[in-house]
Length: 436
Image (cartoon, rainbow, N blue to C red; front, side, top):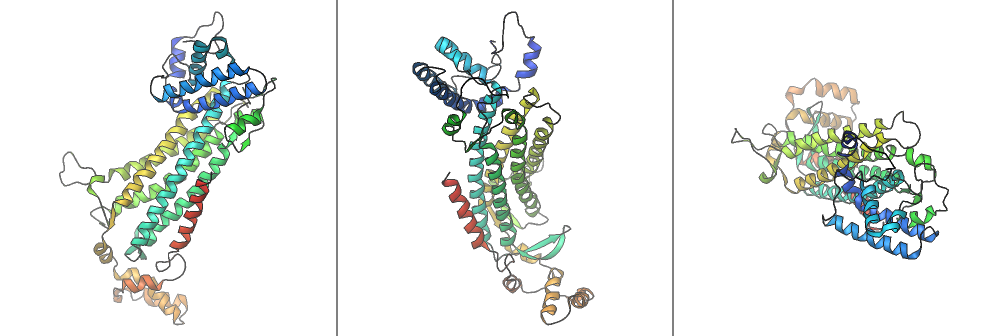
């Protein structure tokens, strides 16, 4: 292996390479096309400031574009002998272009290379995440609209509390995802800063133009201080995973509800059989494993969030090798979140309320608070009304669920879900994505 830092009479013990490199190549393969994209912008900048000539610029860009295609087609792969993607790219350019290839690393370091590749990757994936959030929020809102009049027991302390509806239950998740969208937008803004040109963390004495690469790579702003560029690694990845975790928490709540609500004990919802799995010993089982795995994956993303948050703690300012583990944590968190959004979207398309079962679970006591409110509306002080109903629970009878849903009319209640307001917000956020 030819490392970029190899000098005369320097050797590296095989155990060192195995320990540092072996688990890093998978992440680098994901980031590879973004490293190429940044290298092209860097070559254009070097030509503009006169550090390479036009012919060298042309050769470098052509070979970088060819390399990107070869990698995408599986013809160029990162192997154990490659220390990282940066080394593989520069070695390839040197082998194919000779002295010109050796010039690509002018005025930059692997430190700012990995930063800019990670930021470009994150921006790309966070935009994809936003698109999927909006799609899922819309589909859940459609589900809520379709089933808004179907009653459903509401729970506190895991016990029946008050009447709710399938529409109210479902639209709660649609609204939650819209908040998650806003958090992802903040993560996007943090990633939308160009660190290229910070080099090893202290800039360079060469006359580079950082504003040009910022514009070419479509960053909204330049991350100015080179030391902070390095110190922000781990910080921004951690916040990005934290933002992703908020989505996973929303999805995990859905998952947990549906694991229970599709069980034989509740039987509130039916799921398309193709989305369930079976048992190797019990022939009657239909398990909603996808939602159980989603709950576990939420914990996994949480662990990645803690990992990236703590790894940069107590490090001296500047680059430290500890930060290499943030690549896998970030990539895995993004992939898990995207897959989880897709599986929940699929589930809602194949989910049906069991109306008869839902109605039968509206036992008389669940209407107790509404009966208290009826007395209050007639002029009885609340606490007196509370005592009147509370002391006569055994006399309660089941109320008409249809009128109960319709008679709750304040915004957000079962008779006024505010779906049109949520729809307006979905439309606005969707427009914001399209206009990027």
